[in-house]
Image (cartoon, rainbow, N blue to C red; front, side):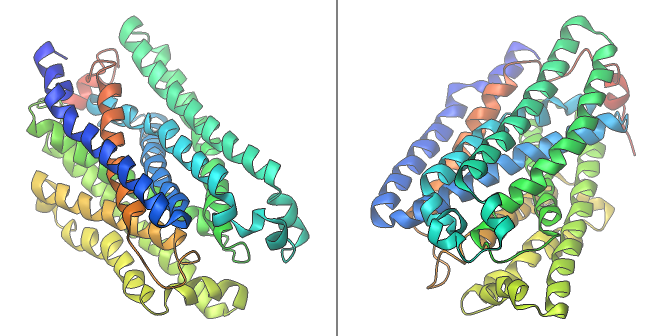
Length: 390
């Protein structure tokens, strides 16, 4: 990447708005802690999981690309590699929310709340075991993120084909071990908010939302870079179309899992299961419950069905924004209903978390992007990717 191109990505004038966003977000979080301290930890959990999810989705994108031997995304793979740097950031915020807000968020971690649980759940949610697992989740995912970036950057230096095979082996390991972490962390960090409820498909459901939101974030970043004249020759309309197709497919998969979880619980009508949906389909939660599939499936599915919209930078970026808003709403509906008896609320803590998340993600991404060439010049599949066409 040339000096001029690097300056387009890392100029102080570009970074200042994001620093202001972080500062404003932290200030609002502090004010929210004074006005409604009970919601501070929920807001941090909401923001932390959103950031962590985008980073984990980038890991999945890179791993799938590597194990399948695909070449089409090689020319811009430094962008999802930079996105993996969000894993430790989001993980740290999540751990802070869990560690400091456990008494407010998780009834199962209190002695009084654990008494009503089955014996296995009492053991599973013992405080020491729970917190050690949470740290392990973040540590494992962060190690994978570091490993992906290290192998790729070393290949730029030595141009060895063996780095490609190292990346494939690491990717295969991540798809197995990382998926266990995603499923178990979904149970521990989200399902544990309502410890009596359970769903065996919940981990897959959360994975679908994570991957869909990560694809939307990746598409937005690439469109932003192209419009600033960066990666102009490395990312063409066919690359954008393929990412849009990926996002289209994942939105349908998300909807399939959403419907499967709902209809099976509705059909069996077991009180321990139906309580989850009963709460979210009561009172002022009901409009948000139905808005969720509209944002996460109806909009991307119908707009991206045809070929032309998937090749439009404007249309695909707008759909990506809708998907990210949908993911934020999906997380909100997973976290807040058991904590807000009076119905949905958006206050200083939630707005602060949103601003801080956007600003922090941008700053971390820019810092990681400037740490290596935006084009993986040592990757043997680069040339094929540069000439990618439908």
